[in-house]
Image 1 (cartoon, rainbow, N blue to C red):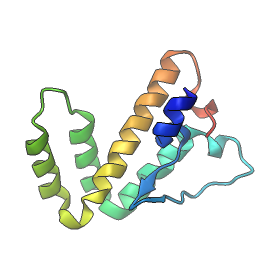
Image 2 (spheres, rainbow, N blue to C red):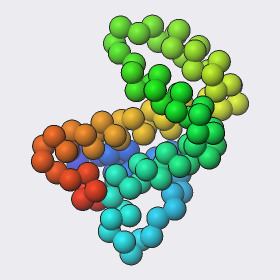
Image 3 (cartoon, helix red, strand yellow):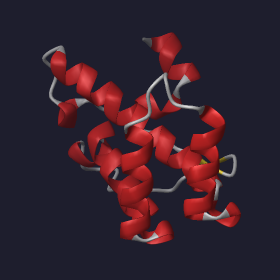
Image 4 (cartoon, rainbow, N blue to C red):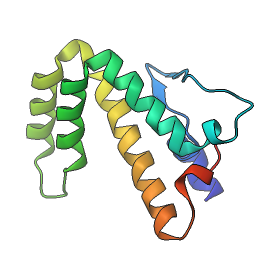
Length: 119
């Protein structure tokens, strides 16, 4: 798991945009606010404020339903058409969010509370 954390920083609640860590609104003194679950919720707020709630939800629905059978080029084209080239980098952030949520769901299946998983 430590090796995965180094290669997949979203497992620790670290998210990146344009190569820099996204600064989320958190209170360092509150352990609950430092949980990966809370950070993923803050990331949703970041995405909604930058893309708009409707656009974010449309992109999120499409990206979270991706399967191995989907045509990567067609999917990329559909998403770029939806968000526009200027906002294409946000697709990477949505992807980080989905990976993080999948990791949280896996921890939950293994009996850990998502709010107790600290970053």
